[in-house]
Amino acid sequence: MKKRGFEIVTRFKDKNINLPKRQTKSAAGYDIECAEDFVVPSIWKYKLSLLINNTKSKLLSKQTKLREDVQQELKPVLVPTGLKAYMQDDEVLTLVSRSSGPLKRGLVLPNSVGIIDADYYGNEKNEGEIFVQMLNFFPFDVHLKKGERIAQGIFVKYLRTDDDEGGVTTRDGGFGSSGN
Image 1: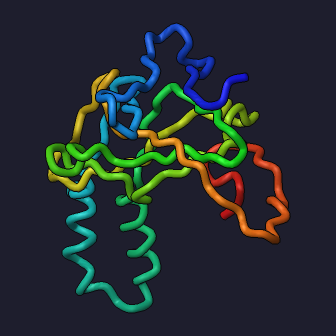
Image 2: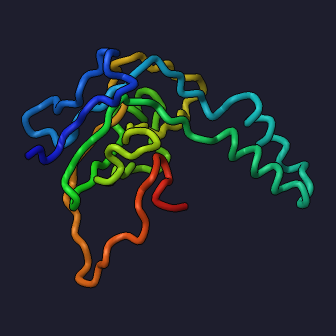
Image 3: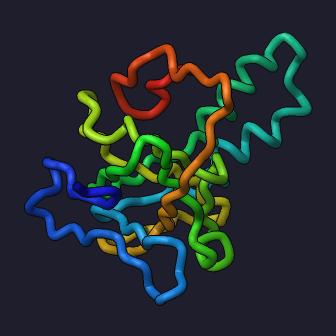
């Protein structure tokens, strides 16, 4: 019986995707690569700069619209990996930044740690494909090449409380499918 690992999703089967691997004997993280060339845009685009500079001149009644505009500009992108992960019911796959991402490239995971639950694997909406949420805080776009390492995946066992009755919903999709 297979306990945990990675597989390639159907849409990337013939695209020469590498399964994640640890780079050293004692490494906890499996390096996850970008599945295709991808651009992570800088958050400091011209429109965002204008929005920030004009903030002081906006009336209070227009703050909601301004907030929506800024949020749209700062929205993270979802970088495809072409992978899905299977694991035991009491495990999760955590996605974390590579140490060189923020320092050398300005790339961060806006949620700090991504969580891939065991029941995400094989869901009907996207087959359980893993995407890495990214933001680029450097002043220029970052062009990722297919095969570049973009994150680390670490399998972690977790504990449940004594009175845990399990979830009340069944996962039926991708990002945010277990609730808002």
